[in-house]
Image (cartoon, rainbow, N blue to C red; front, side, top):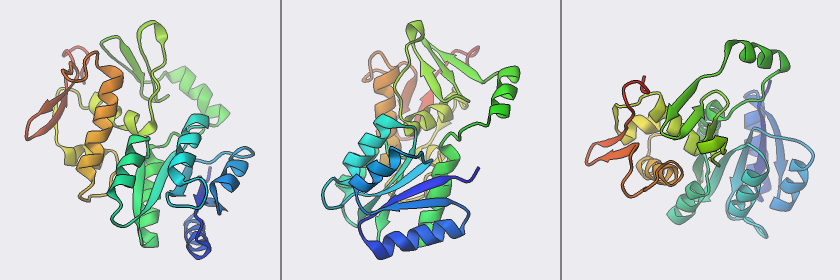
Length: 243
């Protein structure tokens, strides 16, 4: 299945250039010139990924991205003007999967799109679902939680579903599959497909902070996701639960 991408950008030349380039590289691409136009399209069809300009007339990209997150599972890349670090940080805190800084090269957009799509769960075909049911999913338990690594779902006590953005689950999966090992920020960034840049460490820290709020009884004194000062992080599990 070809991944479907929506480009929401109010600059027509840039919007068309990105759409043409991604289309030439094998993606089904739709475009919208505003948040209102994007909302109308999303009511009628689904997409795997959205590239959202933050600074648009009317409703901005951050608000549109928050609405998308509440409606459907979708990867989100924000496009922000150079020097606006606050927008990037706010976007990450809202659950963005990545961001690009304007002006950007089309090759960079393609690289980030590919990286995010590797982490966004793809709709399974009916036959694949049957095979999965027969072979079983990968589950990992930690404390009162259980993570379905294939279904990308975390449940707590009594089966309560833990609301978790894809970017947060990405980080959790890295830790669960590498439990009881010290991981540097660089290693985590590489595992979740971040491009190597000065903002990566901050992005990892933000996701870990959000993750702790959801899985730790006391986020200030974490039981699972511990900081190793000056080194990185380690996800502590009893030996029987780790890999």
